[in-house]
Amino acid sequence: MYKAYKFRLYPNEEQKVLIHKTFGCYRFIYNYFLDKCKNNKYYKVFDMCHELKELTILYPWLKEVDSCSLRCAIFNLEDAYKNFFQKRNNYPAFKSKYKRQTYRTNCMKSEYKGKRYSSIELDLKNKKIKLPKLGLIDIRGYRNLQVMNGDIINATVIRETTGKYYVSILINEIEVIGQKEKPKSIVGIDLGVKDLVVTSSGEKYHNPKEIKKYEKRIKRLQRKLSRQVKESNNYQKTKIKISRLYSKLKNSRKHNIINIVNKLIKEYDIIISEKLKIKEMSQSHSLAKNILDASFFKICNMLEYKSKEKGKYYYQIDTYFPSSKMCSHCGEITEKTNNLGVREWVCDRCLSTNDRDINASINIMFEGLKYCFDN
Image (spheres, rainbow, N blue to C red):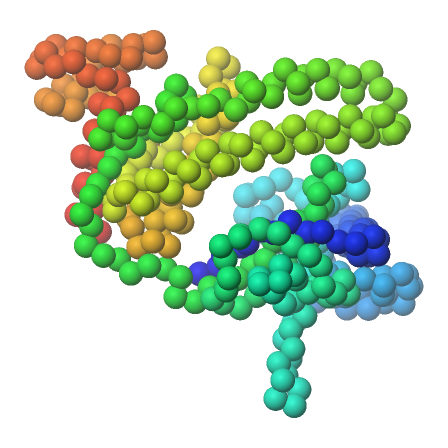
């Protein structure tokens, strides 16, 4: 199982210069071959790699950076074209130096006189990482992590628009998937805007609506940015301030989701949710901002991979299952819940009072039992 670990990087001034050179060379190679593919035909990876040797002679400054990162630029361009041909993404775009900067390098291993060497090495005890051409760099992150069980495949160096540096390490972990045990507890969860997660056991996780905390400050800075001279010093300072606010918004949202998911994974063996179509849901102008802020897809994605790690079960029921319309006591279908303002309703058949979200989560749980028996 592949797993990524993201660490904060603290390079010195010399290392920063070399990192920025690598960003530039990586961007140059990507844009050079993308331009060739646009004007002529799509080049094969073999032909691009062959021409790369000629480019290093024509442009000697390409030899200053990690050669593996230049080849990775070609492979990334190939992946971008594959995604386009298979209709998973738009046509590849040129990389800009004014946006988030990244480059990837693969881990090369060798052995000489019985001693093993690796181009990327991670020392979690001393909080250092060795990267090609850069040498040892200080890192921070994962305070409780002492050892990684697996081999390093590649490393991606990132410079965010906030000016912070990160490195993402891809590990091929061994025996990371937990053994499936006999389940003892089950829960259905309903995802919503008012309460982010509502469980069939009656527990509600409040939606903090993170966007509201930063919206006014972001709007004010964006208005200020629009009045400033483009690419001036003050323009760049304001851009960094906006990026930092977006970073805080993203991190606080992620922190809340991780806490909820970890608690659900710890307490329940089987977790069942709806398969939501976020694109269709966000077409409602009155709810679009709150729906996207809630990050439903991220919650489901995190539940899926964390349940695999811990040996738990995660299922998603059909999108159009009427979980909100059905009474969990008698199965009667009602139209009262078409109005989103109705939070409680009384069943016409069995006269039971139902909480909208708890009732939906109970229906999701019982519908998900069918998937449990099938598997």
